[in-house]
Image (cartoon, helix red, strand yellow):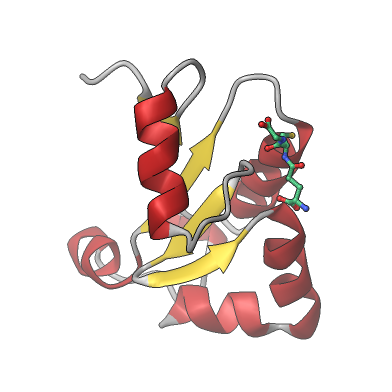
Length: 111
Ligand SMILES: N[C@@H](CCC(=O)N[C@@H](CS)C(=O)NCC(=O)O)C(=O)O
């Protein structure tokens, strides 16, 4: 196991629209770049966990090259967290919660 990557188990019971895990992973893989001491990262992960989805966490603490890679993919945004749902760059924690408030997050996770 690569030490800076953490994944959580999806709880299929939490989601009425849960699909077969392989199909879900293919279509809506969720990636979140984090650092250890980051309240916004904690909040973003809490929301994803409440949604019952699996995500890949990439901890960039003390890894400037990895963080640069993240920022390049995120159009220059270098704060953590940075979150992707499938190929869609969601942005940071505030962006994730904003999507949730409009109901769009649930739609994206269901796709
Ligand atoms: N509005 C952003 C705030 C993110 C933020 O400020 N993250 C802090 C860590 S909690 C950060 O990356 N600070 C700059 C740094 O650590 O270099 C969001 O919602 O994601």
